[in-house]
Length: 185
Image (cartoon, rainbow, N blue to C red):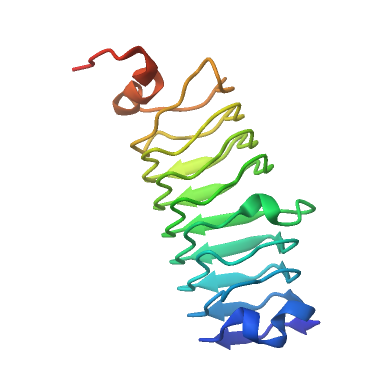
C-alpha cells in the first residue's frame, strides 16, 4: 500500500501503481498510459493528468478528485462500482461513458462533457456547474434533484429520464423541449 505520497509526471501503466492500493496520494501531471486496470485509489487527487483512453477495467475510485484533467473517451462503467465516488473540476471528459454508473451527489464543475454518455446512470442530486453538455446522452437517466442551472448545451427528454425536483435555469429550459422542434425566443 502507498499512503500519502505524491507522484509527478509518471506514466501510470508503466509503474508498480497497478499492483498496489493508493490512499491519500496526489498524482500531478501524470499520464494514464494504455491501462490502469486493477489499480485502487482512495481519497486521492489527480491534478493536470492526461488519462485519455486508458483502460479502467476494475479500477477503484473511492472519494477521488480530478482537477484540470484530460479524460477523453474513458469508460467509467468498467470501473469497480463498489464505493465509486468522484468529483471533477475543470476536466475534459468528452466522449466518455458513465453508462449505468451510480453517481449520486457527484459534482462536475466547469467541465466539458461533450458527447458523454450518461444513459441509465444515477445522477440523483448531482451538480453540473458551468458544464458544456453538448450532445451528451441522457437516456433512462435518474436526474432527480440534480442541479443543471448553470450548464448549457444539453438536450434532456423529460419523458425518457427522471427529472423530478431537478433544477434548470430559464435559459436551459429549451434543452428539455428539443425533441418537439419548437422555437423559444
